[in-house]
Image (tube, rainbow, N blue to C red):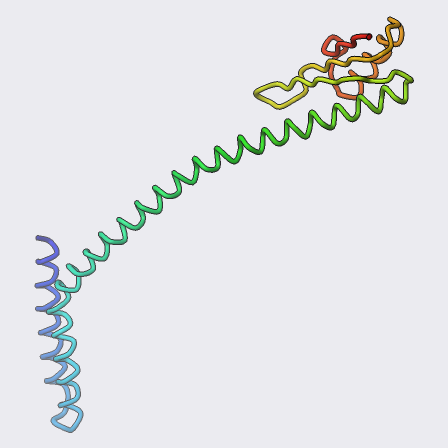
Length: 166
């Protein structure tokens, strides 16, 4: 209702303004051009509510498009969650392989041939939780040194490393 009142006010203001403008202008050749221009402005002002209704239809379409894009983004977030899980799995696999290779090389440098390495990861952080090493050496001193070196190389405590002799 207030929009209709505003529209009526604009029509009255425009009518008064155009009347004054036409009265002020001298009776010459420009008068017909001003009258033509004033008539065009008057027609646009009259049709303005119709344009507003059509604009609201476009507004509804725009809102529908935005809602659809939001749904797409939300479904995309599910894809991001999947991608994060895949990335975490890849990171854990690469970490396991790197630790296995590092422990094998460490065993070779210490003179303790490594037969097998198992790496357990923390499920939440992806950090190395435990390392199990199987060697062909059965001496307690060599296994202790291997445990100490592995813990130091992996950045974990010695109690998180188990060395088995074979």
